Image 1 (cartoon, protein in one colour):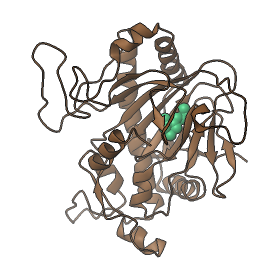
Image 2 (cartoon, protein in one colour; image 1 turned 180 degrees about the horizontal axis):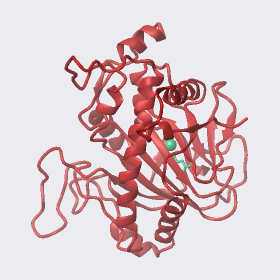
Image 3 (cartoon, rainbow, N blue to C red; image 1 turned 120 degrees about the horizontal axis):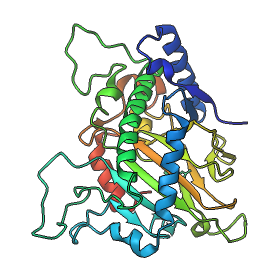
Image 4 (tube, rainbow, N blue to C red; image 1 turned 90 degrees about the vertical axis):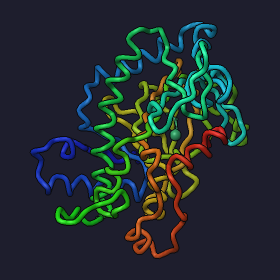
Length: 344
Ligand SMILES: O=C(O)CCC(=O)C(=O)O
Ligand SMILES: [Fe+2]
């Protein structure tokens, strides 16, 4: 058994036929209903570029701790800190109250919603999430290469959520009637991600040394079991097999989501589950790296706009034949809860 493979190219190619798009949409509905996870090909980003992204992250993690801590994340209100952006050393990330065995840099869309509070002379103090990204000085090419990559990923994310709107059989937009952000047509996800408050994580995982045991404490995991909290995740990893594991619908079987060269591993997050009223569930997954070498992964979380109101879509509520699972809140409110709660 392995996860479905989907080719998104009909949604990136303006000359593709409606039939080819429908076919992709159909496969997405199947993949999201059965797994919440799939491989994505046809995204147009060359494999050499993907390899460069992994290699630059690997070069950063190989630097001495002292240098990595130069862009350390600090709590909001402390000099240079916004409680979210920057580098976290090994064991600083916490999932379900347990330390994860990884180190990471978190980058977010730059804050452009409200005036920033700048400090006098120093790096400034910031409200949560409102500081600037803390980019590494080394390797020097990391920042420009990642910025270009993030632009490309936003296009892929848009293509994907467009396909998802069709996959849910939401009505196609009526060109004669005005739409609002909350109009529930097949473009609803595209409109609510057009200023995506994206997150990019560069993650480094040392090989775990503790022995495998069924009741091993969660603290021995590379990244504890969780769902992703946003919209869709486009995950790029190095070739290490056996690390990322996905919980199947039976609720007990863990499937290895081993990387396919040139493809992203995609999964849906809690905001899609909420929008679809649970027709599509955000699937639990975890990382246990007991293989060889130092594993590097770079997930890109393509999220709703900060201000997007996320509540179950009427058609999905009808189709799911149950009450709305949530009363609605903005993505920003949801994210702030997650940041304050150390994420998962
Ligand atoms: O490193 C991976 O393969 C997955 C990481 C992950 O699930 C996450 O950062 O949310
Ligand atoms: Fe995840």
